[in-house]
Image 1: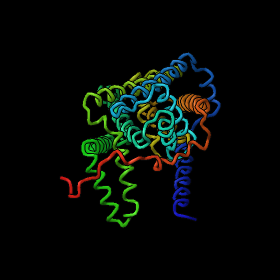
Image 2: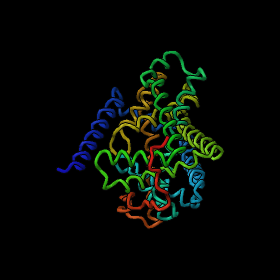
Image 3: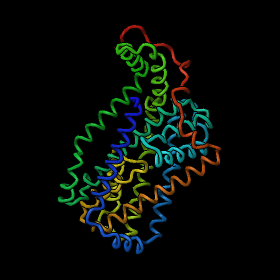
Image 4: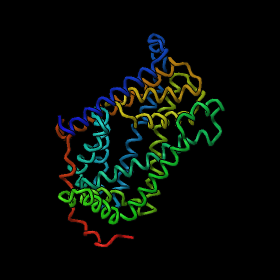
Length: 355
C-alpha cells in the first residue's frame, strides 16, 4: 500500500472510531421511544423559523465572501458566490476531510473567474473570522453572567483559556501572513530547499503566494472590519437557529445566549475527526453543552438530531440542486487545485533574508 493510501486509510479509521465512540457517548442512557415522543411534540413553527435564519446566514456568507474577494477586484457576482458556498457545504456533508471547500473554490474559479489560489486563501480568511466569532459567542454567556456556577464548572472541560491562547496565536499568524506575504513565501521556499525538495520549490511557492493573496482584505482595516461584522451576523443568525429549535422543544432555560453557546460548542465539535456529515462529534458536543443546563438527555438527543438533520438535509439538497443547475458532476468535486494556480502575477522574493 502506498504512503498516501495508508494515510487516507488511517484518517478514515480514526474518523470512524471518533464517530462511533462519540455517538455512543451522546446516546447513552437515552430511550428511543422518549426521543420520538419529544420529536413528535415539537413545535414545528419554531423549527421553521430556525431554518429561515440558517438559510439567511448563507446569504450573509456570500456577502462576506464578496467583501473579501473585492479587495482583488475579483468578487464575481452574488449568485455565483451564493451557489458556490452551498456547493462547498454540501460537499463537506458527504466528503471526508472538509473536501467541499476545494469544490467551493473550484466552483468560484470556474464560474466566477476568481483565481483558485485566491479563492482558497479567502476561505482560510473566512475560517479565521468564523473562529473569532464562534469563540466570542462561546465566552459571551460566561462574560454576561448568564451561566450558573455549576454550568460554568461543567464547561471547564473545554479549557477555554487555552483555546483563547490558541485562537490569538492563529489570528496573529494570519495577520503576519497578510502583512508580509512575500517574506512568508520566501521562507517557505527556503524551507523547501533545505529539506531537499528543490524540484518542487517554484510550484510550492507559487501556491503559497496565491493562497496568501486571499488574505488581502486583512491588510485593509476598513474592509477587514466589515468582514468581522459580517462574521458576527452570520453566527448570530445560526445562533438564532439553535435558539429557535430549543424553543421548539420547550427548552427555555439556556435562553438566546445559551443558543449561542450551544452552536459554538457544536462548531468546535465538528472540528474533530469524523465520518462525513459529522455524525457523532456533533451530537456529543451538543449533549456536552446542554448537559450543563441539566436538561433531560432524551430532550437533548431529540434536539441535537433535529438541528443536525435540519442543517444536513437543507444544505445537501440545495447544494446538489445548485450543482446540477450549473452542470457540475460528481467528478467536479475532485478539483486539482494546485494545477490552477498561476504564479505569473508575483515578483520573485529578494535574495537576502528578509527582516
